[in-house]
Image (cartoon, rainbow, N blue to C red):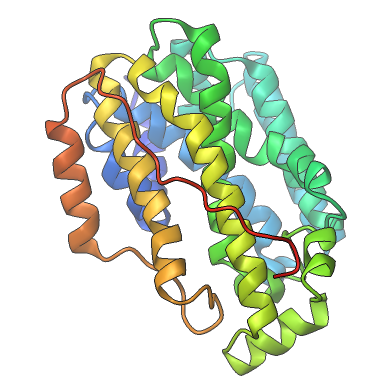
Amino acid sequence: MESRLVASYERCRELHKQHGRSYYLATRLLPAAKRPHVHALYGFTRYADEIVDRTDAGAPADRAAALRDWAGRFEAGLSGEPVDDPILPAVLHTIEACDLDRSDFTTFLRSMTMDLDVHAYATYPDLLRYMEGSAAVIGTMMLPILEPADPAAAREPARQLGLAFQLTNFIRDVAEDLDRGRVYLPQEDLASFGVDSGDLRRAAAEGRATPRIRSLIRFEVSRAREHYALAAPGVPMLAPGSQACIRTAFHVYAAILDEVERLGHDVFARRAVVPTARRLRVAARCLLTPAGTQVVPPVPQPVAVGV
């Protein structure tokens, strides 16, 4: 492998280790030959996200231009043109080596563009249309690397796991997203619990959630757990060598919701973080779990709207 490509994979690995601690830990349970491809996908998605989210890098129009430029270089690379970029050589090599669906990358970049001018979502179906590109396709990108015995059957659980992970992030990161001018929790959900965006901003400023906001977060946690339940059957479908990785990621991300619940659904008091010791225990347990073992997700608790 040429030195430029090696350096690109290493840069992606560094981004993954720095910004995706839980997912990076899970990836270490994959066979060594698969890990660089997962790092490449993480590096690609993280780099695009950085372009969009770095508000200190200019106005939305400037960041949109930067994203278009980078996406243009990516498209050129797909066509076989040489690419001078720290991230793209690795992901282009991964797409070729693993025969990934190129349309997933187009869908992902479309959702990144939405983040520049869409700041709220009226309904959950509206949010799901955004998450299709920002989360569900991440699951389907991963499938050829994880090698399920029946890719068609594994596709929907993979999509659901991507949705579960992202909704978990949205729940945990309400305050951070407000700083970027975004509210990912659907406006209809806020209204159902007597909450508006101003209430969220006041809670963020005070570092404390109101009872209504806590009820809203409890509702969203239950919704996220429904996605985990739909994703669970997909883990035993994967190649035996891939199962410990995804099993670990499943349980560690779901544990973020446990931490949110432990905080009384107050996502403003402090950030919900799964302690390192717990993450390591989960990884060890999943590594020792026999391949083919079914994943038993936490049961979603029904939450009455407005309660």
